[in-house]
Length: 212
Image 1 (cartoon, rainbow, N blue to C red):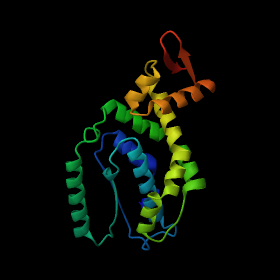
Image 2: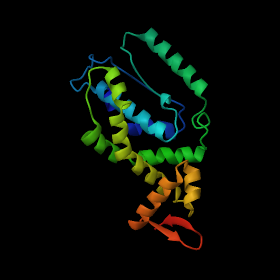
Image 3: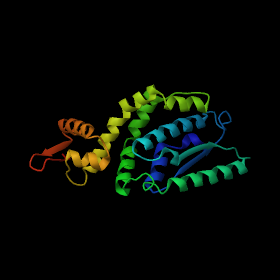
Image 4: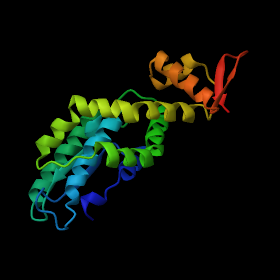
């Protein structure tokens, strides 16, 4: 299967099911077997997924992409041994990051629910095409990419987490902020805007928010 076929949802599903790491192996850049050169798409998606994982507190190095041709069996073994060692040092998913198991699942589900939207903004606002891996690395570390990510993704991801958390019991803004590890001011802003849209209701007596 071409690495260009690897969807963000595949990676997130693996982590949601408890995988400590996800490895993607593909043809070297410039040696794609298909006219689509899907390995460039895979490289972009890997960087984007790492950024999403990091934003919800998951070690981005748990996702790894390597170029390995069919004739490079020795290199494949070396890479996999190295990745296995890296994951062992990182510890089990969640525990290594110090994130509660249930909260981690919620955060990953929040990202998964945003995938259709993320694909849309990726295609319309984020997508670029470079010739080298270094150029992709520089782009994803750039101020421009960080600005776009904050503008297009960060707020929606926070709201997605809040909505999922409130599917349980009504909670105060402080409880939500502490549970999700978000800034109280940020949580209050999202709660107020969601309430104005009719998505949430506020109980004056309990001082808590619930799904409308």
